[in-house]
Image (cartoon, rainbow, N blue to C red):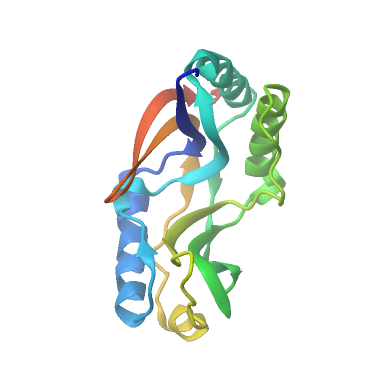
Length: 192
């Protein structure tokens, strides 16, 4: 059996963005007495495409696809929209910071990655791309009540825009303490 690693493509966040999100996440966490698994600040990012198990022999091809998608893009900002949840704040499974995508620039980058890895045999996403940063997830068998009130009471004015100027191919190792992410390739956008 060929050796493989769990991978995904992500936009990294700078320290100022992480600090602001961690502050909002901490305040929100203090208001919610519900069973959620909170994402550590060090693990925060924007997922562009989850690939799952990638054969080590195919990692270079995946990296080339992501390099091509990055080379076709100029850097751009993603302003914060506010707190959100999938599927909804009334029935949350995942709590997020939602990001605006002016001009659909991030969506186009994600579509280029998607099209490239599809040619390598990775299935397309079943839903439209939505730029966001995950804050917390409900346990698989847990039911979480509405978080609408907590969202309304949480000050998000300190959130900062995300500057998107690179894509990372990340390895995800599942451990008893949670996932550990390691960059396998850091690919910069064109500089205009």
